[in-house]
View 1: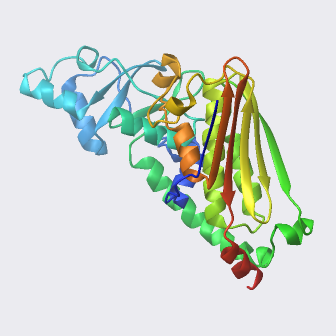
View 2: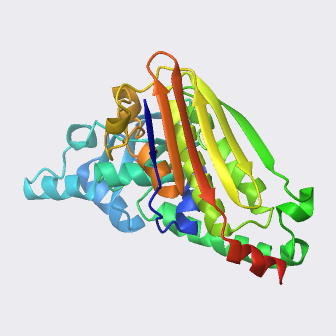
View 3: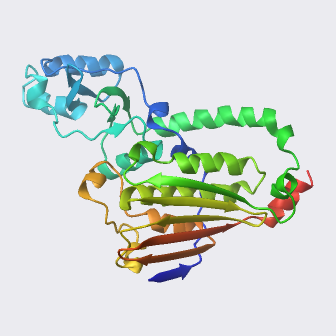
Length: 319
């Protein structure tokens, strides 16, 4: 089954791009304030006031067993139970995020769950930090400022260079990445590497941004929905082509899969905060040309073409 269409251009900011590149461990707060189940609610109230925070994780040893928030304290106060133990008043269903996940996945988790904090775990289950809704964006802005200063120092190295200058007339550069299914620890690494390479070629920054976001979404689809496959980006002086190919299981209804919010991700993947059903739609939105072919039992090929700004090329060549 095949579907074609020209994607609608969207305003994709450098902030959104950076949140896909940064890992949670780079934006989280490492100084962890926590309590045990033996704390009283009155002690929690004083701890929250002292540190000016709205909630803390509850640990037994190094194991995360719950969270207690200012809302829990308020209810205990209203019910005259400030002497109650934390273990009797805490929330036991804790939404978490892994330290090595892309920061953008934490942002999505905040949006979907409306929680006020996310304990950050390493892959061994140990709490290594805490994340609040404002952390990813705040840290990303600081990183953007640092990178801007670094880029200003290196700008002279990039003046006047384009793909034709580096490789010759009519040249193209092809990047290929093998992506393993269910490799959430490696999520986003291929698209981040591609962004760094494309960014050094002097191509239209807006087009590179759209291409690498499409690559990120395609990479995540390979991880979430398939047994793995290949992600390819081909850069020419006129376009960047993003292509993802897998060997199954294939898509039953392509048109339905293109609808925002539709997802076939397993429940355990959704519980991790992935599989929101926006991947293919986001790829289509980033692309000037979009094509998807899929056959159940054989696999899927997704192709997105992002055109480079010719005026942008002239400006760079005339600097």
